[in-house]
Length: 162
Image (cartoon, rainbow, N blue to C red; front, side):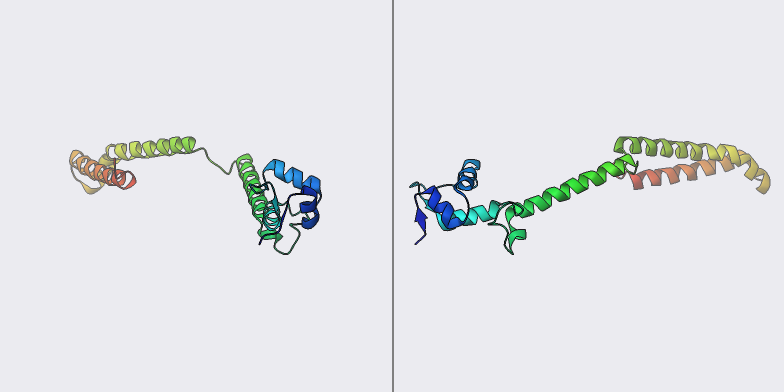
């Protein structure tokens, strides 16, 4: 049978805390009385231990204090704070890129390369034709066809759905 008491002071004495601590924990919703108005000492001790700040509460200062939900929450909050600071530092040191700016830069580079490749056959076909003694127009047409195939293949590889 669970250990029960109607008195807040008696519950505090049995738990080894002050009655003020019991009142504060009850007001904050960390613990609650049973429906009949009494305190279930074991249940209250378990709830106080689970929600206690290990740095402040004598109930949480046992060997298993690191495993309480409150302690795990504090560790998670610290980890989030460290991650936010790391991201802030990376942003300050310009290690992070804005996705929109990066996409715009890649589009600019890609279109510049595409234009350079499309203009290349017209620029070099006369020189190559003179070296190998062939018709410059025929050579330019062949080069243009192969460049178009190359660009189409690259476009399919980088944007298969489009």
